[in-house]
Length: 188
Image (cartoon, rainbow, N blue to C red; front, side, top):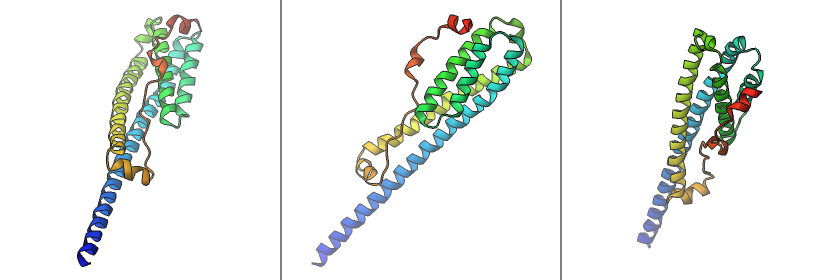
C-alpha cells in the first residue's frame, strides 16, 4: 500500500513538474514574441516619425505632386492606427508602396535629390527600412519558436489547457507581389 501511494505521489510530482516546465517555457516564448512585436512597432514608429519631415521637404520642391504626397500621409496614418499584426503588415505594405511612388517623383527633381535635408532624411529612412526588415525577421523567428513549442508534446497538451494560442506571423500582403504602376502614381 505504501509503495502504491509513493508511486502515485511520484507520478503527480512528475506531472506537476512537467506542467510547470511547459508553462514556464511557453510563457517565456510568448514574452519573446511580444518583445519582438514591440521591436517591430518601434521601428515602424521610427519610420513614421521620419515621414512628415520627408514629406515637408519634398512638398517644398514639388508643389503639384500632391497626390503622391497625400498617399504617403494616408499610408502613415493607416500605419499609426494599426493594432493587430495583420493590420500592421498591411499598413507596412501600403507605406512601402507610397514611398516607392514618392521616390519616383523625386527622380524628376534633381535639385531635391541634392538637397542635404532630403538626402539625410532618405538615409535615415533607408536605415529604418533595414531595421524594420531585421525586426520583422526576428519577430517571425520568435513566433516560429513559440508556435513550434505549442504543437510539440507536451506543449500541445499543456498549452491548450493553459490558454496559450498560436501567434500570427508578420506576413507580406498579397499585393506586395504586384509591381506598382508608376505612371498612375505620377498622374495623380
